[in-house]
Figure 1 (cartoon, rainbow, N blue to C red):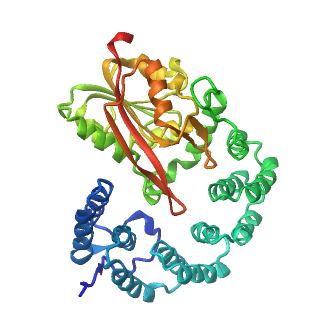
Figure 2 (figure 1 turned 90 degrees about the horizontal axis):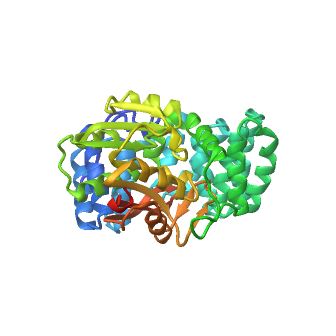
Figure 3 (figure 1 turned 90 degrees about the vertical axis):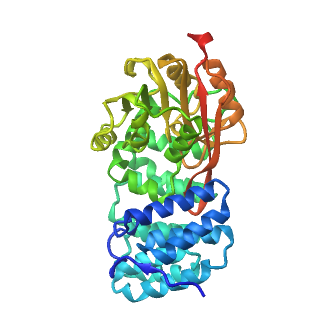
Length: 434
């Protein structure tokens, strides 16, 4: 008989459940280990780790749900009993609207779709502008093909913020990702007069819907330059305060993919290297880069992101930089350049790879992640770009890098329940191009 799981405290449905604030380091470490085993194709080990954590550790609800989902992904029969136990313990705690919203979101995540949707609908009748509830129920409705109902959920938000163009662009991206292009275009038309102060974000969303900005190889459009920089600034200045929590909720694995490639390279962790974290964001890669770094430099376009990175106290230098403009780069050369979860904001990568080569020592390393494409590169409905392995290899070759020495194929994140295929590569700068 399956052992009973234990929640970490009495009122675990309060606040923001994504923050894992009720979890111990042991619980979070167990979840990370189980995910790593699953990502590495070791299903049996993942099941064992998840089961051990569920039966021996006090857990917060999001961590418990994440461990159960690992069991479900492997087809393990214990997923259903654990789900029933978790929800039975949580149900008495759903004593107000906010807690019922958290419970409904967990139910959807745990594949109790109808029960979760009903709970969220009832909660939204009481609190119609709750964004987490709207997002969760929107995803469910779009999966069911109920596009009009999904759009209707957003009308109270639009009424509460009639001048907010970015809010409407959020719905445009969600609809486009779900294949609801006609509905996305309608909302985009409504957003346009409200986007005078966020024009770059509007143009990116419009281009994604039109299917423009795509290339089958280098030279077929840049995807770089001033509009690109402006769009990036708009996104990340707005995103910085909640960046880390949001990426954790999406199951973001970009930094983990970089870390695994770095481990596979078996470089000595002796603080000997000059390392550039290009597009460092809030500094998520900094802690595992520091043991290798004599000098760790982080650069980003967003001052708000740099402020968050500075608070980690792991970088020797932090500065602003537009990766598309070599004149803004810090003085090199560097033994290693890291670029995690950044190149999705660029189309053609010829200029960026050329800039990376210019600041990398001959024989030095470039490690990066992208969202994977079948061919060439293109702008996806999400507003991010996807790049194929063949395109990357050819563009890297022209910039002066060799063939990939490490390749990591994995889901980069999840959006609305769907995996986003990712690709990580480690390449060396060729001495010939010195």
